[in-house]
Every structure is written in structure tokens, then in C-alpha cells.
Length: 94
Image 1 (cartoon, rainbow, N blue to C red):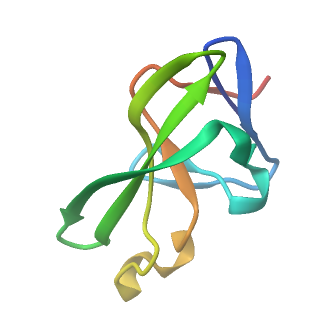
Image 2: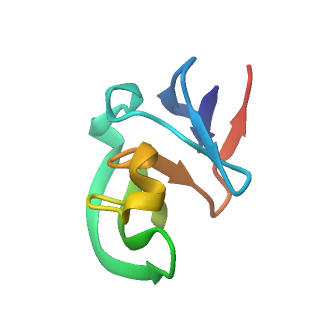
């Protein structure tokens, strides 16, 4: 799976984990030069507290476009530190 935004592949992995229709990419699949930590957090009743990244690609910022669970609840332990995308980030097999 590849995650693309603003003309660049920001993550690429053959081993994503799918939860609630979202592909979660392992940290090793991320091109970290495009990721900037965000102050945003949200809480999911069964996964726990999510943290966010902004994407900074070719001079454009996509605020809070990626999220992850640094310390998820036990029900979501399989996605600990894995990153998912939204806000126009295209996730596809090619």
C-alpha cells in the first residue's frame, strides 16, 4: 500500500493493518521528512488517545492529516505506533 499527498509517496508498505477501513502503516514505512508532530489529540472509546502529524510536502501543509495511537488500549494493541491517513491523502495498492 502507498499513501500519497501533493505528488509524493509519504508512506509505502506491504504490511499495513486495517482497522475500521483505515490502513495503518508501520513507522518504518513513513518518509519522516514529510511528517511534523501536531499538538492535536483525540480520544476513541476503544482505541484510546490518538496523536497527529501534519504533512509538509513540497511547500504545502496538510494539518493533522495522519494519526496514530502511541499507547492504545489493549483492544487496539496491534496498531500501536502505526499511522493512518485522511484529509485527502490517497491510500492505494499502486
